[in-house]
Image (cartoon, rainbow, N blue to C red; front, side, top):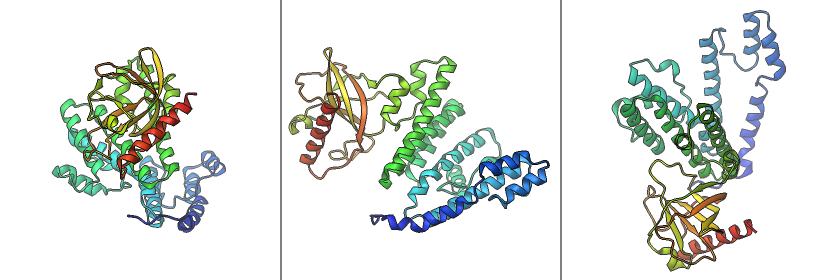
Length: 358
């Protein structure tokens, strides 16, 4: 277990970042570059503004210089950060980009090297070796699962867009998991904003293409911010699935829940505890919903359930399909030491839901 990080642990890296900021292109310097009379004059301005590696103004040289600068910055920050996961949040997208390139290049027999970016958590050479040999056990678990699923989709459908969607979905899932592991509310919020922005772009593309809700559900990414998603949709995100029989633990604890299972391929919000409201027989009830793998009583992290406690309601809902609207995210799922702690968590969430809808 990592030792808790103190604010003072960041003094050195904060000073380092301040120093690095002085080399960033300012608005004024960018205007000077745009107004340069010759390529050589623009090149000199860029070399003086943090890109000494730049040796030409052709696109290949520019991209190489930008890549070199990014690699140097990531290496510098990773070495200085008290917890490298804070940097991994920003690096891991390059891992998923590289897998996209390698899979598509292999499918058409092209050279992937010009499109690869050696700035991720995993070196380009390691990714090449792993994918070429079909051995991904040495890759980070989510990255390995993403590569396997994307390859299967590409091999089956021959559609690179579908393969890219798979990798993008895993990328955001990975980013969110790393951000949550750091315990940083700022990083978690940053990733949620990235997911919301991606979903907003998907919504705009879907509308422009004249596609329906089924198409949209296939290209949205889970893990965003529920209020933001509701604002984009113009209505609360909601589900309406048949209530299934569960293990009966909720009844035993005095907090009976309705259990609903997401259909295969249906996009879910991120795992955690939510303030919801549930429509039963024409009446809306404040409720609390837990979405995830139930870590307190279940060791299988792949078995995901959606369980909703409706305080003040009693009745048999098996076989019905009540509407559950998601309104606010409360907290991630966690493993409790005792069932009493689990019951208290459910009751607390239900109380907050009742206060929310007063």
